[in-house]
Image 1 (cartoon, rainbow, N blue to C red):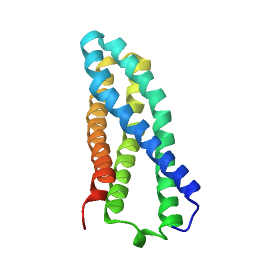
Image 2: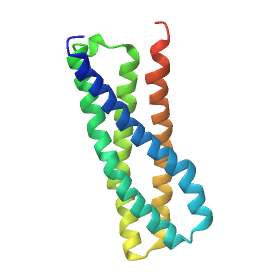
Image 3: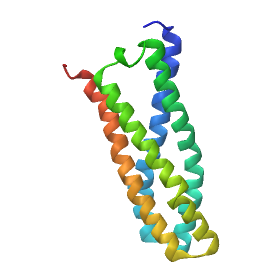
Length: 160
């Protein structure tokens, strides 16, 4: 490892914290908030809740999708002298991360944009359709995020 351990520790810490915020936020939204909101809230209130909640959460996701690749590539090129120096599971993590980012970008620029517009126009039928699409894509991204964590933590210890 060519870089100072101090800088590597900062990069790893930022990398992991950004992943925890993103994946943990999706887990909370999907597994805790979604079922309760669906049972307790009328469509107008539920859609407004999701629109505002996602608006705040997506700020953190934007930070995560900047920090995770920056720190990841910085570690790869500074500490391991490029992709040839990293373990095979790092390539899997990178591929899964890119897929997650692409799914998020689609969610942000398509169904989330439609959800916000529908809430502002009080078009709850369209808002419901957009929210259903967001829910499906967040569920997929959550599974990919958990798989990425398994890859990062569990596969490192497999003999290869």
